[in-house]
Length: 469
View 1 (spheres, rainbow, N blue to C red):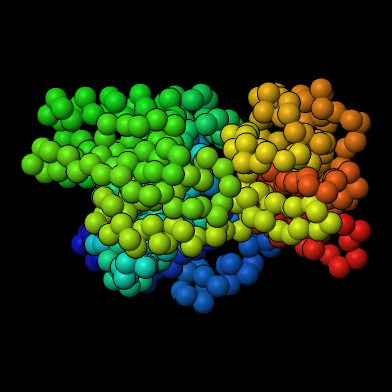
View 2: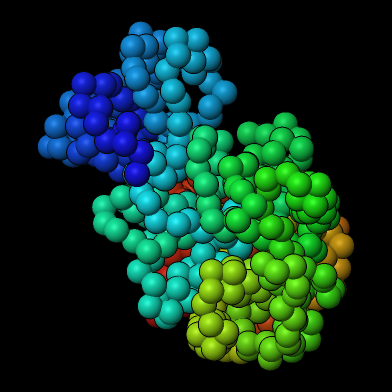
């Protein structure tokens, strides 16, 4: 634990952004004796319940409706929530005055001594972190599981854990400084958040920050089936061979056998892990039988397996857990089977790569619900993946016209104004043996607070007793 942060009862901290993680960060600092203020772009009326909760904990200095330089100055520490871009002009002015600016994840790491497993990537993060948590629990390890999947990272400071497994977005990684995971994993890198990053190089830089403080005794696990990560990993291995103080890079692949790491081909997993004496542990084990469809989920499972082995968990516990893991809500979640039609909820598929992975998981005819709040996605990329097996494309929500325009070859003239309309259309056109798949490829903000609410609504609509399915 960072002793300097522990004994700063006379110093002033500002927490920017009052989402779940911001609130948790403010409470942690206040509990440690800091004088805490908070700032949020939203108006006070909208934040009234949050501000009252903070006031109950002794935090009453706040700024709402924007961020002013006057309010930000004369702080010793500023903690920024993930949704607040660190490129805002206000932070430039603050830095000139020597104030330290960090993210909530960095704050969390400074208040815990437990070793960290940190995972990022465009898709599959929550599934992989969740199954990792179950493996560690099955091994009897007292583990904190949190980060981007809902439980704020700072909550790991509430008690002593033997391990912490954190799902981290690129936004959260922007705010780290000394954050140091024992094992770092990057699952994949595909275009996302074009509104935040100017190009793929900037996105790669944001994601690979996860390993910037790792040492030779640490592990970096990368998906070799991703071209960018393969190139990055090869470069890291070369740097290590040249004597640099960088982590041991292990690859995982579901497409090819690899030299260092683990591969899953057909029904066999081959493990090749270096030993401290310079040799290799090389063996093959029978692959688990995953309950989740799709090659991308095999990749997620393999990342979890390799991480667990690197931690020292026995194979039997790992494979047993992988065999029983049934997935999580909103990630290719099987919702219902009605009149020979299977309904799947993949509301978490908010970018094109996630849609591709979802579509590729099925060999049966698809009725695809695509739409929501467009983040500037290139829907045309989907055309070649939809050529076979698409019963109907149903554009819906605010992005409906853009989806139909970019995928005009599949446009049948129908636009659903909202998710309810899309489900009604799907019920009308689906035939026995089909799969109705909600894989929106868009954010949810045109109609819902988040993808969870969208997925919950889809589930409810499909399961309605008066549904004509």
